[in-house]
Image (cartoon, rainbow over all chains, first blue to last red; front, side, top):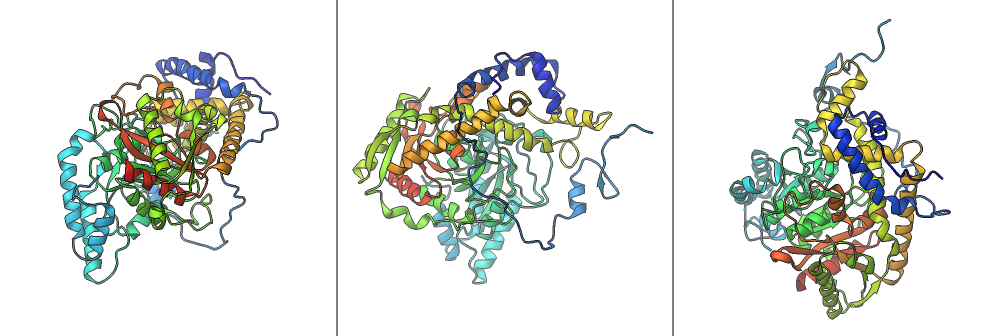
Length: 102
Length: 478
């Protein structure tokens, strides 16, 4: 099992910010490096426990495959939903270009 | 404690249903109190005066027509601003959702309206319910009505303050690690975190989906019971809502505690940072229950000491996933960028406040390649240990006692620069969320500077009737 990282670096924080899609400022990265290290240090008590053979709990209820009946029902109104979007066009959400122009 | 009109939710509903009092008058009385004191307290992100008057008039029209408006007839209610209200702004106290008007109502919002309640406003919270003081709001902090130099607790601090200030006899909040119980304790109100799955989360803006649960605030245990009975029950729109019919709690309030076995959780009364007055209050509460016929003993629930660490890995991990939806595409804020990834990242940096970013970063780290097993995986296994330890305790005990918050209300700013110190506010409330059980905070005595103390009553899943019997017994002898 992977052990907890002893020291969180600025590079770690920059990497995680990219994963989390957060365009953080230098000050924010600085501050978060300190804050996250403090919380992870506190979490070392958990990270260092020997929990071999203890199953994980992801959810408190033993529910499985909750299905609704397969019938057509009314859903949210498209125009009403699109009206809340920052930009829309032709019944769709409008976003900046995703692919490079050919 | 009495509300603005000198009456409880029970009394208001009874009077309105019987035609002795108009819902409109009840609303006006509460709006007057809001006008007088809200500028100081800032319990609300939005006061819905016109909507409340219209809703009250509709209740009065029903009574005039000989119809029953329901068990909450004409009772003003304050809703935490992370509960979706159709056509009415729902911000989660975040700039990223500022101005968003949901296209649907949360199930609980529908249920309280169908029961005749009158929504009086949307209450302030720590942004996306992340915090323990309601200082992490993009729209300014809420102040504690008992002492406005102090925080009301959080994250449902606006709802707790609204009830404590008499703005509304009832409020709804959400509790992921203590966000109903801790502010209830700090403001001197009753606050209940029901069993996971007993109240629909449909329309509650998600923070940590395996922990979040909606519940009531009220000035009395009986009023909290009244509201819980209205909102509990299965909902086809929430696949994690329990299919079992809810067990009514209002009926059993006065069944007493004779013969109940009550345990005082060793690890929590003696937890890090528990103030002596708070510890004394728990022990006095236990003695009170013993005098009322319960048997009381100490009990060890050893793994709860790991609850805080496990929670601050699991909740941020789930939050980092849930908050991925705020990407500037479908609702809320957008900050333009040259491509989609840049637009996403700039929107999220501009829209989220510091604590939300901290938790997204922490959660993303805990889930990232190389660290998943050491952090998130371990935390999930600790969750199993805590659930097992509680199961052992509940073989011997019907209910458990602990402090709700280790301290009374602290001054604004006291913990704002120290995330870990703030997180410790939840040390006694978190284990219940990890196990999916129910717990309530009941005012019991006062501590430093005459500030209210809350005692926590914990029970096993779906044992709310027992929890309410104990809570009622404590309230009668507080």
